[in-house]
Length: 602
Picture 1 (tube, rainbow, N blue to C red):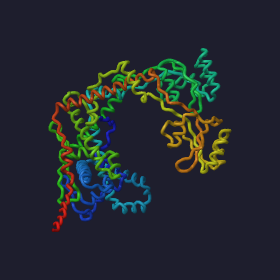
Picture 2 (cartoon, rainbow, N blue to C red):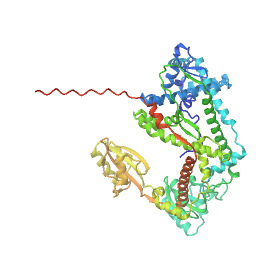
Picture 3 (cartoon, rainbow, N blue to C red):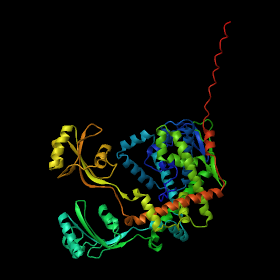
Picture 4 (cartoon, helix red, strand yellow):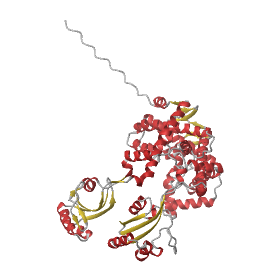
């Protein structure tokens, strides 16, 4: 329900985040005279924000691109002005932060480099284009740097206590769980026949390290020992990442000692002898203390930053001019135990969602509001209940509200486990989670004429240089690599994965029939290493199945916990009523009187 964002978006408000991108020059507002900036629209702590300021910012807001009307216009205006208010309040608070001229000069130089403005003439033309003088630009850059420094002060000033650090570890144990590892040796050769001969020798009892030393193209001097330092020949624990994906799957599927291969990957053949399998385990606090301290510091900083921005906005004194072109409405839409949630607080995550922006640009803004606003408000209500419960628990939770809510849910469900029977049942009921999709290595050759494609196909069945064969018929070659279903264009995907029969085999691989593509061209596919969809054996994915059971139990427990908190709390949701009140009333046309019937003739 709530995702832990370990790197909380720098700022929780879209416009503010944009304001920090100092290179985004068009967002800057020139410090021109009052008349050139139009009339004041609003005042934040007594400082005016002018028409031109808002118009320039509005021009960079994609929500306005679709020209919203009615209720949607009111919501977009409210969201926009809330961001403007917070940005101005933050600028004012950050004004006391010291920024030196050297820092400003360095940032201006970076901007000039970013926009390719190395010579003076190009720089002056650019300043003229965006309505700035050099001094005005430097003044704005200084403001942005002050904001960045102020935010960093807030973040870095929030230091977690030892108790908070240790408790953070307890509520984020899964984050620090290691990976499965193996102690193993490998032999890597370029010839399949040699690989099969070496496999036979290894099975016959010959020393694997000696075989590796004599034949392996990789790590021969260490006897194929993986993880061994130069000059050493004893294997050290390694994770999947040291092997090609295909080899790693087979090696770790053993779940114990054994011999794997030969397996082809990247044109080479791998033999691996696993000496010991080391399943993943959750480390002790002491083993990962440095990582936990760093993560806890970031979480504490996130919470401090969120609280700081809320306080800045809460304390901002805002006054609007009369007759402005913007509709600003920010009433309470819900409350949790008397704590109000304002409309703008719900609009922020909704309008920051790319799906919402896309729907608005497609003219479906009302649909986005009807779907996302109620859904988002319910999530915010749940979050408030969980944060409140976390505070009442007396435990030292830290982080943003989202982080605290997620951590509290984990803490309350930390004792859940899965039995063997439950894991097997989960495995049986969810085969898609444990299935390796079908795959094939595919190369395509495309031709303008069907006759050319057929001629290429006949030649490809006999073999030769693929590029030369295609070029002889005026075609082009595309190497798709190893693909799974639904990764190729639709026509080609059907050819590779939906046709049950294989195609004629040639020296270059299977050679497909000629197919006509949507653009009118004709294609022939060459297919190698077909692999059908396979269900991984239970023994190989037992831990994943158990994790799936626990995840499902945790979700159910979380829903039950939230429901219990809702029953015990006083929750009010007025969103539908508020939206109805904000929706402009359409004037009903007066009904036309029905024509009177003519009197009957005598």
